[in-house]
Image: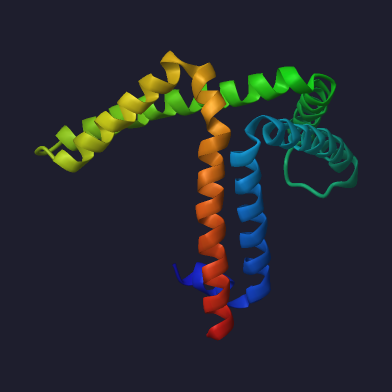
Length: 179
């Protein structure tokens, strides 16, 4: 906690303000036009993967990483292939990537819920952990029973979180400025 407080003090207040405004705008875009916003975000992600893949391969020859060259090569090839796949198939990617993300979140919810319930029943019943574990399992099952519908709702949910986070960052920036 001490390290994060030191970093927060070093960050200029206006950086938090810009971050909050950008998050707020992104959230409003995701809520007002979820399909188009998701398409654009997925395309940015495709370009990011492509550029990151190229940089990973270049890092093999510049020795600017502690990773073994084989890992950098694998990361580079996967990044380039994924980036090209997303860029060349924008509509397909806009459907597939959020759906895969929802499936991953569903599996994580079920696994985390099971672990939480096991921990809750160990050494005496801790009802809080059991209830949270059960909720995780329920949400995981909901996501997995209808991943496509959950993927359609994902931009709206992300938009709400982005708006909330943006407002909090803006408030935090003004608190930093006055301090």
